[in-house]
Image (cartoon, rainbow, N blue to C red; front, side, top):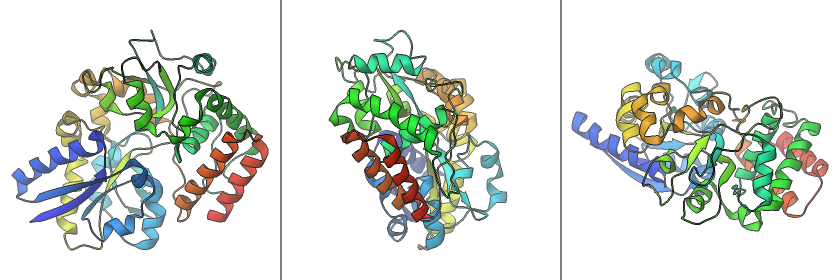
Length: 369
């Protein structure tokens, strides 16, 4: 028997699933062939189209409202995955739960954190003021390609002590969101136009080049691959978010991935068995992490054997992840995320004031509900 799977095109998204699939074939005789899509496609491509072709699909949690409405995924039995639910990092498990059903299992946990070059800085920036000093010197990078500019606005609102309202009618409280917008605009002014073409992988690849001159990224999704010695010419370290005010590292826009099972194919039982196994404690803290994955299970984040080769990547960012903010997941959110990111970037590029931009983002959100 052979299953098909779709994941995203980065060693962190691909290598651990291939390694787990080899072990699964030895255990069960069931083979799984994995295809890859770009990070941009992962963040925007319709899941239903993938569910028509693949038995297993790695998804982003904001798609959950859409896939629930389309009935293209097979929900998991909550009683069978209770251990995984109990070991959730922050809102990772909850992020795939909607309308009383569990639509995917977290296999990868991430949030926006800080990245920094330990060979060029003695420590990561300890405040937003330090971030901006480095930015003024041209030593900071930050991805602003949609949807990452919007993710950064979300995170800055959280760092200022706010919480965007996922139930609406408005997503943003205008006054606090305006402060966050001005912080992001000041950072964008220091970065240059190329930032609007960069996603997190682009930024981390650039940082990891010898002599790149970039010493930190204050708002970027953590990628454990770059924390390992030898992955790229220069190693990148990761840390909790630099505080903006008194709130500390709270409110980062939750990322990560979940493994879902297609309801439109005829191998759902076998696919569910694999997904439950690969999301469980033993595989996550063992084979999955060893193969370059960024586990979604708390046991892996706490394990010395997982932290040591990654120079404490997990412990250094755990507080941010546990306090991360869960994005909206209603059917209509994905269209909003795309339109809002483009509107935000237009405002940042053209030096617009905050009020009309935030008003438009709230209008777009109301229309999405």
